[in-house]
Image 1 (cartoon, rainbow, N blue to C red):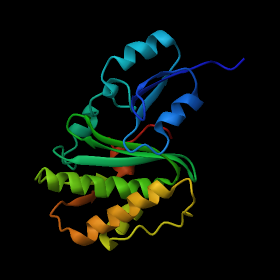
Image 2: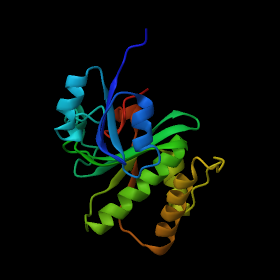
Image 3: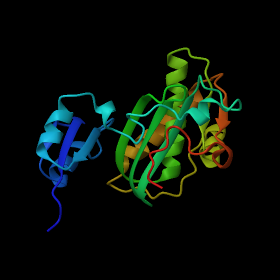
Length: 208
């Protein structure tokens, strides 16, 4: 018999604890900024629901940036790192931004149905650029995606993803991101994260 999980939705249509993935999915699918996680017992789920989601969401939710990264002089610690993850191609996609110095998750978006990793990387970069400009922060922005960096510079998400009735909201986000790039200037320096030399980017979801 399959192991039963319980699901906590901190941010969704109706936040709460749910007994099945189908119930959880109905609360988070297509919901902008949805935050949720599965737990092996009802007791753990109820406890988590009463606490901050950032204690549970993401591989590094309870961890600081590894000391080996902080000791690397090539890495600018006062910076924002972004990354995306996608289960399938296309599949459920999400992205986030992490403050490199502390490993704190600054923003998280998704999951979005029928997305791709490249689209997520692009949206994460634009999200980071917009946030840093809004907050008037001069820190640089790291991404490990050469494609996403190129697309941002060209102000166009050159995805081959097919638009369907399921991922319309995702394409709306792409259009909004492209519009922001065309209508805004920024001084933020975008830096390619060198994974082979430095290891996984701090915003990595740890699903490899």
